[in-house]
Length: 612
Image (cartoon, rainbow, N blue to C red):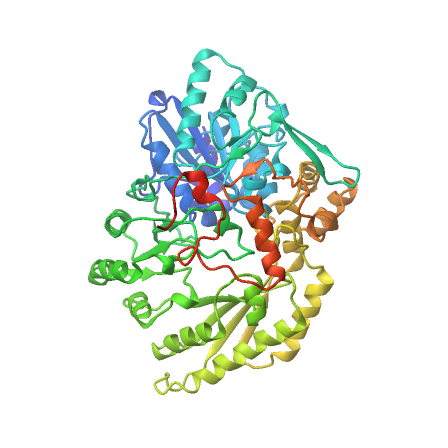
């Protein structure tokens, strides 16, 4: 029936290939042979969700179990959503084209805070109540994972449980438990109580939150024997962790349309603004043999002519040049481009450059983050101006004529002198270009400067810091535009209404659930898309709920404040974050993990050492 309805509407919408399934390597199963069904929902469009590595891993992992079936589900764009509602088509999985409300699990991966209203839209489009209290049946269980659930409080009223940490093991444990509870005739509440005893599982309904008169959190009280702190799950033997032999290959282009091999997990650097660098600790690498095998398998089963080595900092792989030598023996022969994103400026070299441009040149992007050494020390970037200039020299001598630089505005302790530092660095790069004897003739240099606004995130040393106000950011943006007047430098920046909402949702508590619901009812969705974002409606929702945006975004937090995420344990100690925050304000740096252990606490928790 659904196929017939879809046939009537698909030619009336943009890019219908997003909604039909049936792609190469997608998994089809006989529903009669399946005991558990998992609808893996990416709360954004197909083009973005199909680029996400975590979805590819867990999709294949679950489908490896013969009696389990994982399907992919994405947020439809407004033209498709309108046609679905007009024709009574409920949100469906791409593999079966059947409604996901009949699944056992509906799982959302939350990669960014601006996707929260999409979660509500997808639940509603699936024909389900958006509040968990209004879904009394055992199934479907609505769950969430991904980096945002380190503070799941803003979506606590909508989901039944959250998965904190890495999902390769815990997802199957949850599915086995639900399968058992279904056989035993358990209620939803009984299942959730039992699920809360699995390490890494957070059940929001089993925690009572109380507040002080000033609006801060007073206490977080576990109920029914739920753990006082929920400890994240990690994969200890990363070299042997499950990885797919193939990916689903889309019919149409997606954002990152290539094979992806994860080479390491975690980060050794400790940049004080970077949430991912702490959430994904400890640092773990795959062996060269494993990476080579996975690279060849994915390229041969998908037909992609580009493969990307994925991590938070790929150039920190301990044997990066040996690895690239092994891989290019294969990729050069097969005319496959080898992409190396997430390169550290201080790890860039002539050898790396030759490897990554052996088939075709990709763009080069570096992230100084700050314009002066003082501010780079505050954020613990651990790179110097000399590192930046040397990397640009190598790139220019290798034939590159453009470079993109990422900077952040509004970092703690930032002054207008730090703005001058951005201009000075650009000027020095331009001057450097004209000293290169073999620079491409007839071509000028182009520097793209991208300015993002600082957003304080949980589980970072800067979780205590205020986000700058719009007036402060606007002043610095205008100042940079005034002092950087070279046609060789192109400047872009993030819009403050996006970043202020992200800051509020990142450090918010459960009182924001009502705000999200009201904003969604007013029509907010696809908030990460500039053409759909309606901050005016968000402001109305905040006002109607009596919520002060500045309380969450622009307020400095004391070290002894109970945070909304204080009952989450990502294995990095709170004392470490406090110590790092103090070091930031004294402009002191912390060496990377290979140079010296900083005592973040991860090693103690996992019973070993990241580096001997």
